[in-house]
Amino acid sequence: MNAKKASLELAVIGNGQVAGLLDSAGRLVWACLPRPDSDPTMCALLTRAGSEAADGIFAIALSDQAQQQQRYLRNTAIVETRLTGAGGSEIRIIDFCPRFQQLGRMFRPMMFIRIVEPLHGRAHVRMRFKPSIDYGRRPAEITVGNHHLSFALVDQACRLTTDASLAALLEERVVVLDAPVAFLLGPDESVEQQPLSLAHSFLDQTQHYWQEWVRSLAVPADWQDAVIRSAITLKLCTFDDSGAVLSALTTSIPEAEHTVRNWDYRYCWLRDSYFVIQALNRLGATRTMEGFLRYIGNIVAQSTAGALQPLYGITGNPQLQERIVTTLDGYRGIGPVRVGNAAFEQRQHDVYGAVILAASQNFYDARLTAPGDIALFTQLEELGRHAAELFEQPDAGPWEYRGQEQVHTYPAVMCWAGCDRLARIARHLQLPERAQFWREHADAMRPRILQRAWNPRRNAIVDRFDGDQLDATALLLPELGFLPASDERFVATLAAIERELRVGDLVFRYRHDDDFGSPANAFTICSFWYVNALAAVGRTDEARAVFERLLGRRNALGLFSEDIDPVSGEHWGNYPQTYSMVGIIFSALRLSRSWDEIL
Image (cartoon, rainbow, N blue to C red; front, top):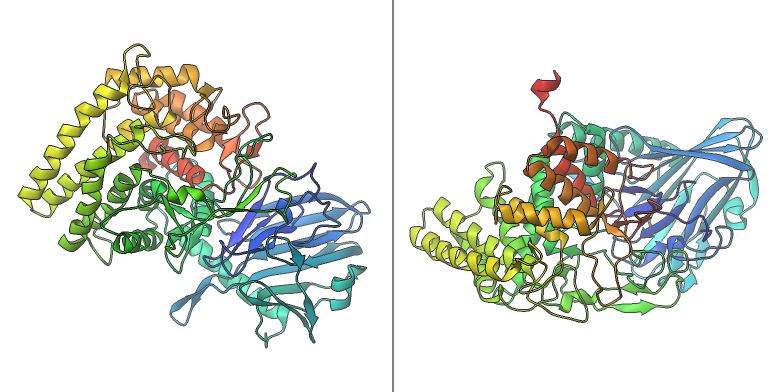
């Protein structure tokens, strides 16, 4: 990757087992094998070396490449890249990971498939396949087979099977592409069928799968394309084996150009669970939702006396020790590159409410195969006990401050929400004594939170008890049921956030200094919280206009990262950011016209 051209104009492919990122020229620049939190076999995204020298890349390019176009095939996770040469030659690259029903089960192998086809003229093509090991420490040692290349990674033996010239691939020589070829990158297993024929068979079945999956979604009347692309991307950030939803597919994409805010997001944050579950529920993506609920249930079951940490590995692993690797330069050379995330050791009290709110779906949704019962409720009561005890205790807060602990407002509100939902669930289960117990707790917590979080001098609900700084999480108070949107305190807080945290259509999470100084870029999801808050207070036309402009800030593939530079509009932070894509879904569903208004 050339440092000057590296950007987050990246397409995502995947199948629930593996996922990868393609740059706008169709180069596979990020892919972890055998699963999304593994060693990145393709890691060129995090090196400053030019594309002609970088390891950790799978590139197919015209020798006189002049133009490139990229798109998703309609309603799929299949990417088409068209490359045009200065002399008029043109090729097409189709990239996808197989996913479809086979023998009564979901077929989702650890496999990337690339089909390369000549379209016009005499295409002179150079191919470069350079897998790496141990976060770019060394190139993989390749063994040449009859029609394949074999190589061993840290956790997996792999094979690239192809009907292209192996010599041209290994020597990176320019060759004439006069017929379609296919590449199957997967486990070190024999492929009995002719590669191109098998690739096309998998392509047809994968395209059918995604189009049928999209047909099952309950999309709004307006902004359907944006919602569909967000839903597919959310699905691509799911690890089917456990049901986990990753926060993002990358590590160490910095939050801004001049910062050391580089984190590994290839894990599952419990904070996000309620919002992800709600988005999946409203879309009708019940299987994905059930998988995530199963993951959360397993986390709760393995917890000790109901104690939760903020994030877990995608299989539920609680140990995510953070380390810095020196073998990768970082995105555009901005380091450090981190593996693991030390936030797993933090105290973040909002997780108790988040898990209770997410698990509430089990008790009310008749579509689920394993509805909530008294046994699950009893487990959730353990979380509620922690919420009731900790809501006034210091923690690292929703933004995971590493050098300070305070009594933060948002975690306190989430603790209240957890107790409030337990009261509702108990009433639903016809457990009047438990309903009264949790209602009394919630009713006692709410006025104490408001007393400490409301700052009359600022005329706003502030980020911490007895504090004076604003925080965008206050925009969620109506969504959580803590305050009605009509409450004068929320209306005043919204006005304060507009004055101090909003820059154009973008909203910062906060503007005060933290462990690393003052944030330079807006946090993408906060802008969607702002849109929803506008709608909640009745400023619907304004909300729709802001939402439309936010959609215009997506990259060329319709995706968002974690952060946006309010001046340049450039995307920063880990990618694709699940929370950001959920924001699109929430706002579109809230603001869309009804189907009756359209038809």
